[in-house]
Length: 321
Image (cartoon, rainbow, N blue to C red):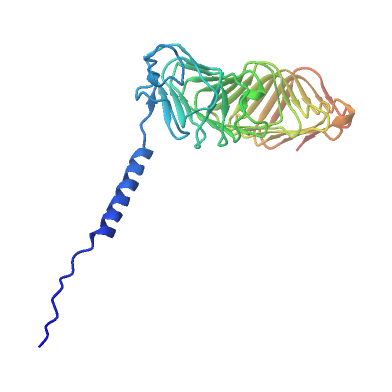
């Protein structure tokens, strides 16, 4: 009688080991993706963003997901930091006074949130680039001084964002939403953007004139407030600017003059308790502004003009409903 040899099945560990190894790689990737903030310490003393020794982990920020913190007190307080072309970060937090000058900073995929601590002013003169907009957080002041190229909307959630030209707000197609805090323009602003001042805790102040070009729009809602010297709706030829002031305590204050339809067509709607005030005003100032109109509708809505208001000079219309 022939006996077949008994063969014991040995465990096949290869695939299991490979799976465990792969799991280890994936776990390592997950751990790496939750990087802690890269903190500035200026250990070298040269104030260069690109110097690895100037960062607490001895490496400059390397991705658009990496948070960056400028601490208080920092290694180089009241610092003027120089950037090269193509620097990157995921977000910025300023706990003290810093100035980022020169170069280009590519901000993060999440809108590059920039947080500035209370009673702190941080200045970024570098060109900000990216495609997910820009978000301002924190009670402090952020001053933008570069000709910025980022695309996507600007959101102000707290504190103050200060600019001296429309180009500081990135690509011309970017909209600006002020949810809380203030957008401060320290010079006249000519713009084709859409601005929304969204609540009783939000404001927009313009040191000179606010001119809406092309299809530029201004929405003052739910108690928001806008102040300027001269407000111009439909500033350039062919433009169709629109301003809506809606809701109790929503205010547009023009300390000098209001022009609804300058060289283009302008529309102003004052609704549901909103108010607009000016020293003097015009509706339809030139031939190109024919069709411009102001409508005042709803209980408590007001248009106040301390001096002359010229209506229908070249086809304009004032409606009180």
